Image (cartoon, rainbow, N blue to C red):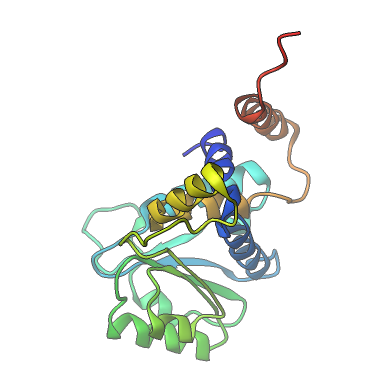
Length: 222
């Protein structure tokens, strides 16, 4: 999902808490991986690998001039013959400690084995963040957490607005899933950063202008 689509999605969600919530969580992520930190570890459950979030964070790291946002993907199973950057197994979590950030991303229960490793990483000084479906045990271990809304729609609009606008915002919030939250968080993580090289600024400025054009009301006819 590119910057234009993120801008449009935020426009639809303007009547809900999700724009602010994803920016707040992204702020926690950005603060925890400050330049003096020891790196960002990204791990999912045994059945879910957060490939897309890893790719988007890597892009944001390059575009925003924040290399510390580029994560190391930690995998439950490492196939033979894969490149070195894709061959980091769960053993890496045992070495996680002070100055490092562990971001756990999963739509399902993380499992007792992963929870135990996350607990050990926190005890050793790592900052633990969770982006998930709302697992209570994982949230109890996390320094900050953001859960996707329930998949089952609830009656009535959940937005703060009224009328059609509030109903659209409520419907959009009910349609949110973990993948969409990952796009919003990764985009927000690269915002409000230090100045970046000119070629990166030109690229992001063009995207920002295009987003403004697509989301602004049409000009008056007279």
